[in-house]
Amino acid sequence: RSSDLKHPAPKAKMVHWTAEEKAAIHSVWKQVDVEKDGQETLSRVLITYPWTQRYFSSFGDLSNAAAICNNPKVKAHGKKVLAALGGAAQHLDNIKSTLAHLSELHADTLHVDPENFKLLGQCLVIVLARKLGAAFTPEVHGAWEKFVAVSCAALSKHYN
Amino acid sequence: MTLTDAEKAAVLSLWRKVSGNLEALGAEALERLFSAYPQTKSYFSQFDVSHGSADLRYHGAKILGAIGEAALHLDDFNLALSKLSELHAYNLRVEPVHFQLISHAVQTVLAAHYPEEFTPETHAAWDKYLAAVSAFLTIKYR
Image 1 (cartoon, each protein chain N blue to C red):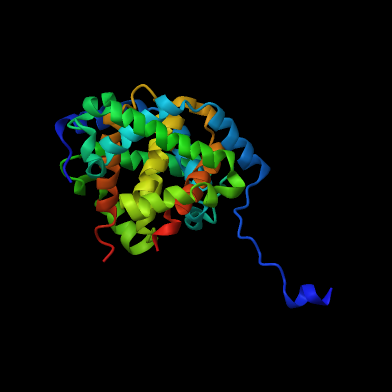
Image 2 (tube, chains in turn brown, purple):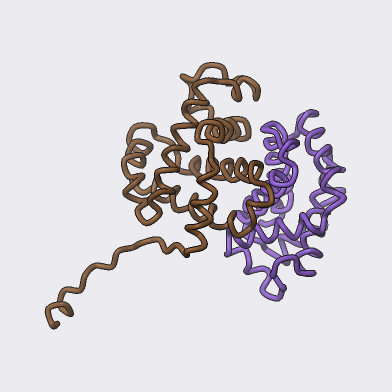
């Protein structure tokens, strides 16, 4: 109709996921242990990139790898982080709004540099590769990197 | 960026296991790199990048071999990497950030194949080591 041509509906900017990518993300997510894998992921971030400990000065003993791996606050926080990513994995077509409140929190209150989201994403991929081995094929890995990148972008949205 | 004795030991011990399987592991690192970061394919337009191709096995082995050679010269990368440093600066001009991408791909291969060995400490040592190699390979960029 002519009225449609005058006022076309705004295009929704959605991430396009292939069926294979969605299947890969969901099948990996099913095998995630939010508590154990969250703890390992955050521990690896704090150990591999020690400057990130700056954001966790209230967490107590982070003085060496063993202390970090056994730290109960690291464990609790790792679980929280991975649970939030799980929320995004369940809403692949809506990651931006799913993570919007966390984007605000990280930008306005926590003041975490978005670079750190990438570092955590990399450590999560390492944890998944260790856990799943050959099942974490290059294709599945690629889908998961895309998921991590989209989630990082969503978390960075509110910064500027 | 200097590696501690413990970090050097972690790099070398895992390298010894990798060194017997350079083609398969190197090909897989490149496959993962291309799958996770498609922009990296720009350097390989003439390659057969299909799974397990001869190109991937040959070139992957070359890359891992160079990483291993550098591991045997941790106190002076010049001995192992000076020609490669010039190659990357004047000839290949690989995007500086792509070194981080391939480093992550290599570490993912290590994690997938050597989960027991790739402890948090070993992971940290390898990440630091590959960052040092990358820094050396880009040292002549400008």
